[in-house]
Image (cartoon, rainbow, N blue to C red; front, side, top):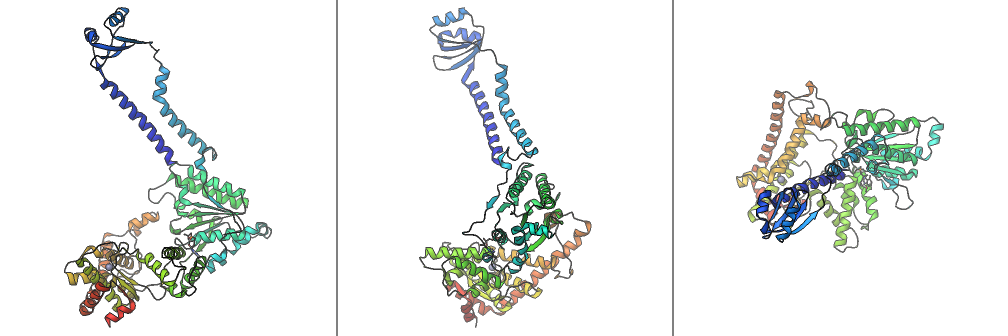
Length: 589
Ligand code: ADP
Ligand code: ZN
C-alpha cells in the first residue's frame, strides 16, 4: 500500500517538475521581440512558424525569437520575398476541454483512487482491493515433515495444558453433545524463541487441521480500515476451512490498550482491534470449531477487552527451558544433524543458561555450518562449544589491529574482572580472553553452576563489583580511564537501578518505582500517586549511586590487596590471549 502512495507522489511530482522545466525552457529559448522590431529585422530572419497571431522563428545566426502581431497577406508576401522560409500552421480553436484535462487529470486520478479505495474498505469488500486481503500463510498438515508433539521438547506441562484443544479440533461435535465449553481463544505468553509457534503448529498437525499464521503487525497499515478488512478476510478464510487454528503472532501490535500507548489513540489499531473482538465474539456465538491462538511477550500491555471471558480467556506461559528442558531440546535438534554420539549433552546444556529453544537451534545450525566448512563428517563437542561462544560473545575479530599499548590495557581490564570474579565468586569463570569479539575487546565469561531463578542482593552486589573490576584495574595501573568500560558501566548501572526501583533493595524500602517513560510505554494513565516526587527522585538517584560506589570500592580493595596476582594475570593474558578456568587457577595459586 505504501508503495502505491509513493508512486503516486513520484508521478505527480514529476509532472510538476516537467511542466516547470518546459516553462523555463520556452522562456529561455525565445527572445521576445516587438512586432515592429521583427518587421525591421526581416532580412535577418531565416525561418518562421505562424500560428494565428503568434509568430515564432529563428534568425540566420540561429537565435530564436517570438512575437505577436496581426499576420496579413502583405506580411507573408514580404517574408517570401525576403527568402524567409514560412510555415503556416492552421490555428486550432483554443480547447477549454484540453486545458482542463491537462490541468486536472492527475488530480482527478488521485482523488478517484482514494475514493474507490475508501469505498472498498467501507463496504468491507475485501476483494475489490487486494491489499485488504489477509496474507496469512496456511499450513495444511502433510504426512511428511510434519511437526508433532515429539518435536516440541521440554514443555511437558504446556503440552498437557493444550491436549483438550486437540481433542476439540478432532471432534468438535462431541464437545457440543456433552455441553462442554470448547477452548476458543488461547494466549501463549513467553519470550521470543520459546516455542510458541512451534507448539501451535504441532497442535494443528496432531489434530490434522489447517493452520493460519499471521503476524499482528501485518494488520497495521498506513490506511485506516485496511487492518480490519484483513482481519475479516483472515477469519472468513478460516471459517471456510474449519475446524482449524488461527495463530496470530505478536498480538501486542494490535492488542495494545486502546487510546493509550506511544502515539496516543491510533485509529487504525483501534479499528483493527475492534474487528478482532467482533470476530472472536462471532466464533463464540456461532459455535464455529476454530481455535484462535495469539502469542505475545508483553501480556501487560494488552487491552483488557481481549482477555475477557469468551475471548482470549486462557493463558499459557512458555518459560525459557531449564536444564532438563535444554537437554531435551539439544537432543531433538542434534537428531536432525549428523552429530558425534559421544557429545556430553548435559555439559553443553549446563553451559548455556538462558538460551531459548530458538537459540539452541541456531547454535546447532552454526556448528553444522562450521563442520561443513571445515570438512568434518559430523558435529562434535568442540564445534558446539565454539558455536556457543560465538552466540554468547560474538564472532572473534582476528583482523582487528591493536597496538601493544592497547592490548596491555585490555589485558589489565580483563584481569581486573577476572580477579574480582575469582575472589567474589558469584559465578565460576569459564574463560578469560582478550581476543576481540563482536563489540567487546575482551571477555570474562562466567557461567552460573545452576539456573538462577532468584538473585539475592549480595549476589547482585558481587556481580556489579565484577563488572566494575575492569575499570578499577585500568584506573589503578594506567592512571587514566578509557572508553573501554562503557558497556560495563551501563550494565552495572542497570542492575543497580533495578535493585532500587524494582526490587526494593535500598533504604527506600520495598516499593516499586517506575519512571514516567515506563508508564507511557505501558500505555497507562499516570495517577498522581504513581508519579515520583522530586525529592523521591533525588533519593532514588542517590541510592543507585550508593550501590555503584560500594561495589566500586569493593573492587578497588580486592585489586589493591592483590596487586601481584593482578600483574601476573595481566601478563599471562597478554601473552596467551585466552585462559581457561584451569589455567586461571594455575596462575593465581
Ligand atoms: P516463538 O514463537 O516462541 O518465538 P518459535 O516457536 O518460533 O518461537 O521457535 C523458533 C524455533 O526454535 C523453532 O522452530 C524450534 O526449532 C526452536 N524451538 C523453540 N522451542 C523449542 C522446543 N521447546 N523444542 C524444540 N525446538 C524448539
Ligand atoms: Zn569490561
